[in-house]
Image (cartoon, rainbow, N blue to C red; front, side, top):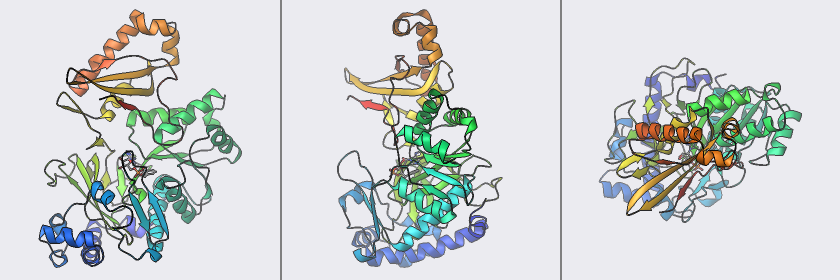
Length: 440
Ligand code: DLL
């Protein structure tokens, strides 16, 4: 179902007019209320009066995660603290977390965006929704929760992890819609199959998967194992949380952006200049309606492309592609840019492998080297007679050579491949998965 027909099917002209009207207001709002933006506008030599339409957005300065960190915890808030009714923070693997606040209106807008995502994912009022994103400072749990309640779903706030309980609820509560990370959906699929539960017997129709990169090959595997649709949801805490965009179940071909609330650009991450429609670059988002922490041209570091081409579902909002990598976790191996998603896409097509793997980056003689450790399937492990065979058998050596060859073709740089036994690569225990070990 289309949750908000009027907004989601607006003409492109009307969307852009609404965005322009909101951008004009936003420029004045941040200039007056956030000292950080007053200074940034002044330094860029731009005043709110220069902003007359969305075409003027490129005159405005960028905002980076580093700048948000430097304003820890509340310096970028645009409203008095007594108007902030919720605070979330990103986990932040290095240094201080990034803190974001929400006014009551921000929470309502967020719920509206997420309700649209449920519509996009094939949910309808009355469905039973098992929410396996983590509740807490992470935006996944509570973000999905409010949107689900707004749509009128029976919302089960089970949170992340605890696979035995997830399986129990799936069966006993007869869940129709489930949300979790894509890597966790595979953990769950394996646990269900391992326990002799056939997912085809469960009434789950859709899995709403996001918060980490995944691929279409992985989607095929998830859908086949879980007998349900797997749709992609995108978001980030700095901008709002989940619900910035979501694929429609009809096309599963790009995530519709909530363009009435977010003005999105794709830029060349090196030069900062806009790229042509359809080209890959860094996603930059301006929040058009956020009150507590409005952001101007936030550099997400997520690499993707955007299209405004018509979609079969009837919605008119632009679609962004899958996230193809991050401008900052891009691996540079001997001068070649390598994205973990490329490595994954190459391996996921091979039936001798499970969808799990580990990457190890090390430095030898000042040269960066990449080692890929794909986990083999149970069948393959049996065929080579266990661990010894995995190291020494001609069958395993052949597979290893084949993967090395394919990697070289797709990554344009050599990588060492070491096959590992089933069950030994990292698994998601409920949240985002960490596959890269950087030993440099
Ligand atoms: O991960 C918000 C979220 C929760 C999105 C639940 C979807 C579902 P952060 O923890 O701030 O917020 O991480 C944001 O995760 O910049 C991307 O690099 C990555 N990411 C999020 N969704 C996707 C996706 C939440 N569908 C960062 N595909 C973003 C690829 C994603 N990467």
